[in-house]
Length: 179
Image (cartoon, rainbow, N blue to C red; front, side, top):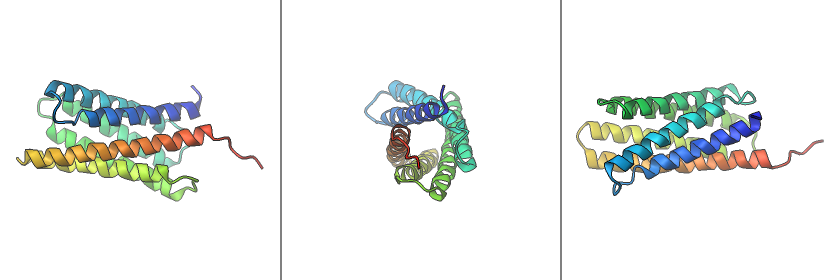
């Protein structure tokens, strides 16, 4: 697969995963549906971030940021499949947040025509941090407030990933100016 198309496909897959996982956070869904959507959403995010990390044209920070986000998603998947996974899930969300910050730092230092990617990466980082904080609240017995924080974080992360995808789409479909 062409490296540019791989990055675009990775960005789309990651955005699809964050939206899937965010839909899984809707309280009115059955626990079984929430679990399935969150699980598959994180699997898609891990795949998408791994594809983006494989972009050889990216800066080192962006590569590491996407790689760490992918590791964070795999950690969340492991947590979801574990009986004692809450702390592991919190760790996975912190890793995703760190990866998003590295990707933001990569974007911040580059000259881009669009602010979509830096804004998207910082929103993803904030969203993941909120999900980790929500998990801590739940673990400490404040389930309702923790869930509210986690839901807000999931949707903030989803908006951020969509902004990053739109930036990738714009970059890959806009003809470059020569000369």
